[in-house]
Length: 124
Image 1 (cartoon, rainbow, N blue to C red):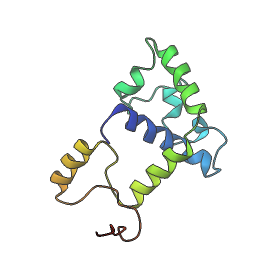
Image 2: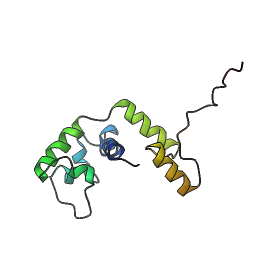
Image 3: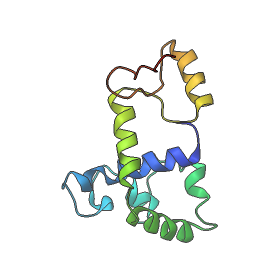
Image 4: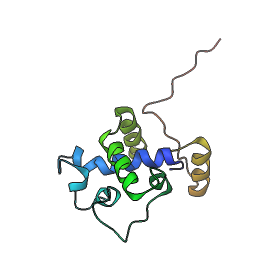
């Protein structure tokens, strides 16, 4: 994952997994979630906030409020489908430049491919 946008999208997906799985009603209720720390409900010395989170506000309180609103907005169905598709194929979610870098490092394709055979182009 390369940009803050992708990071935040996947971060929200992860934070909301326990809610989607009906384990808890709120993300901060899940014992293993980082949501409690990001919402300012507890301090977690093991957590280092990402720059995307710190950019949400100038103060810890402002960041917690912005994070709360952001979490409550939920994940859009198309975002969820995209994340699930990339995970299922073990692909790199990000820009073409990022995918190229990861592909070279892993020495394998990391570009998402839709299921099925490619559609043949009609000849002349």
